[in-house]
Length: 337
Image 1 (cartoon, rainbow, N blue to C red):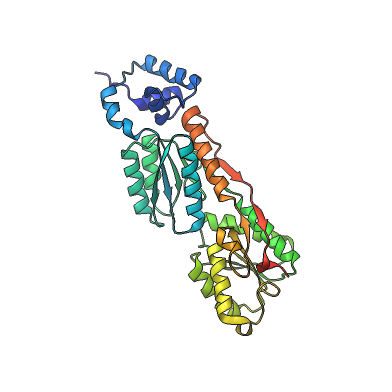
Image 2 (cartoon, rainbow, N blue to C red):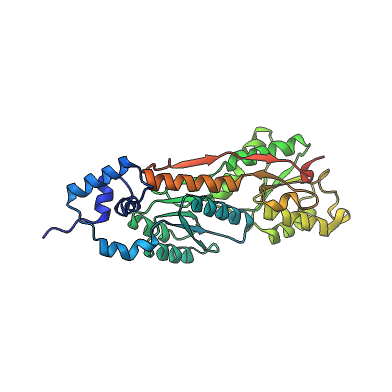
């Protein structure tokens, strides 16, 4: 006896996602007519019969978008998630939000739970490590974006992020223009793709100017930044400028330098030790001295990701393998002469 066709069979034949087929079956107005017609033709060709009673048990979860974030304690990711959620709500969708705290096992657990509850799509800022979560998403045939960090192939899961290489290039060029001659890059774990991306513009700019890079790797955050202040004073007194992996590291470095004081550190912040962060979270403009930073417009990025995943879900417009959004440098007192 032949196997009864499934919703996945319909999706494959129609060239759409399983979630899009579900929306068509639920007579959602969110799917354009051309896509509806493709799905209906596939159903007819396969002899697919819609089990409305079973579908009604799942209908309460229609319009749910899973949002999985690696570190919601970081304001950069919090602002992204908030902006994304508000943009989805404006289009009639609800976001189911989970924080994985950089734990790939927890990531696999929450993704599995979201799939069981019938989310229509997923947006994942992934933890590094096990790829089990993405294997589960692939089996479920649910549209999914990886954002801000890439951990799996972009052919399977499109990736989007701000233009990190340009950001570090702009920051390094700015520090050179301010008279810096020995620029360190502080933070970021070695071997991580996001570290390499955020360093790449810094490395290329130094190489073009015949300068030697200095990377002080570590888990980015305020605690690490405070620790590096003393290491710079003791071990790298020639460093006259620092580009940090993110703003939290830079804010910690500012605090550490203030604690050491000009006497022990040997130079004042800004005129003699220039510091630039990365992300431009709200705190950058509120601290003293105000922190220069690479602005990623993370709120705008969140809105763009909402538009991207809904275009995929509703109109079958699969995003390109890689999407890069613009960044700008915001100079403030921490890096000016």
